[in-house]
Length: 310
Image (cartoon, rainbow, N blue to C red; front, side):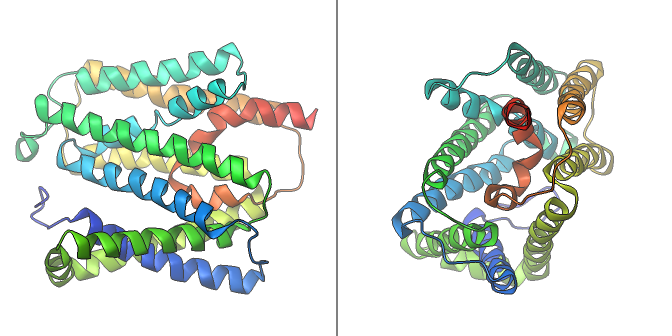
């Protein structure tokens, strides 16, 4: 379909190109670092790749029905399925974590239900269409929660380095995207998208892959908390820039909702940073793979980290 800027967007083509570039970057990274081959069975890594593929596909697909700021805020609900899954498995969270997540959800709801959240060029992205987009985002979040839970399960028993994990998952996603293009006879859409927006696709893939590398370097040099704060800052700046450049109208109710959601996330990391004791930075495999969600994982992991430090 065509974006408001007139560019063509095809989800499977986008995933195939970006995942292929991510795979190449991860291979170089694991080779330079000399990471040991993973002991995780291939079929388990492929399951993670399928779950991650589902999350990415529905997240990108949602942009057919909602504007970008709505997608960014809705994805901030990621702790909800993770929290539900953790509670189901017997994990307990302090009351303030539940309150923090509830404030974020309420803020997002206020933003999405307030005023006319679309500009003239995106007039179709509202009402019933927005509800369909929200369903897509819910499915994406569900796949996110399943991905995190399954990764935790396999990593409790098996070894995997950060770039090794990134390589296997992104390779799996690239294979799945390619097979989907062939099975659904959409190779022609891929060729059309490459012809019309090839440089844009390449730029997205290269910048995204380099972002993964910088995430790893930041965690290794400054720790996961600093990486989380940088990620949170990126998300806030992205929201503001998108609203200004693409002229998405924001009324008082939406401004209040946006402030609540962002404020709750900022408070969470301020509270987390105050409790955490200094220790050598370590790089977790999921920190590199879950680049887009690293700043939100602190909502659920901060308490556990503090307990371990004590």
